[in-house]
Image (cartoon, rainbow, N blue to C red):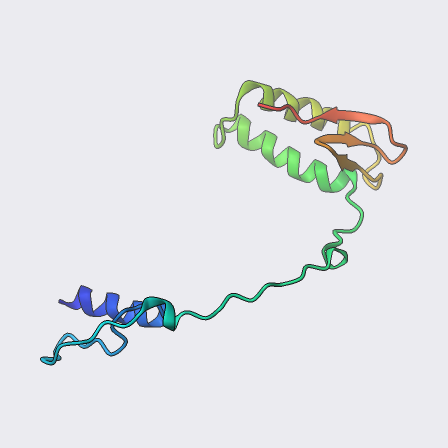
Length: 125
């Protein structure tokens, strides 16, 4: 009975219950209401893409991410396909040849350096 009471209260919090005044001790019948009448209309947000500017993504950024992935794969925490493991190993090796402040550009699943030279392509599975 407590579970039913809790679920009823939880539904009230979500504003999607048929019985807005549910009480497990009530002896009077509850009249169902339309579920849609309690829901708020969704608002459509206009996204300004300039507010999501991540700034300069440099070698330090990607090296931190991919070294962590490499360690997780070596420790057995993650087990991606062999192509991904190979990509991560080779990408970390290549990133070590660049200065940490050099910008890396990711375009169409391909990494380029600040001069536009190809570094590596993310494998497609």
